[in-house]
Length: 111
Image 1 (cartoon, helix red, strand yellow):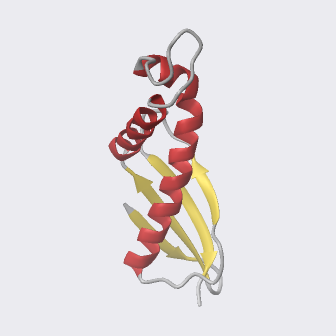
Image 2 (cartoon, rainbow, N blue to C red; image 1 turned 60 degrees about the vertical axis):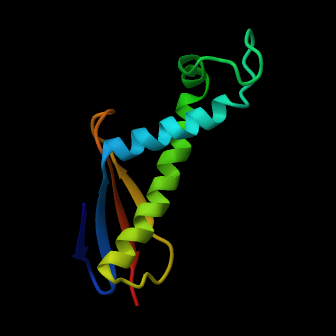
């Protein structure tokens, strides 16, 4: 879901929401990829159970996925709304419930 509002002059505020299922799916896929090469004490390389890999690498992987999703969804939203940003956006994450959708606000200027 995307909503765009005009601020003073050429500035725009775009609010973007990414479904939690998409975030969870990408986190799970990335954890599976990490589990193939993870070196965790007590397990042979690549043989640790996924719940152990999630405990060790979960927060780091989730942070990487959220960063990638923000970059991807911002580009998709700008293209869909037919905007031409005149520089990088100021991203402000919107805090919600931990298991909810990923929501953020991007403030930027357009041509």
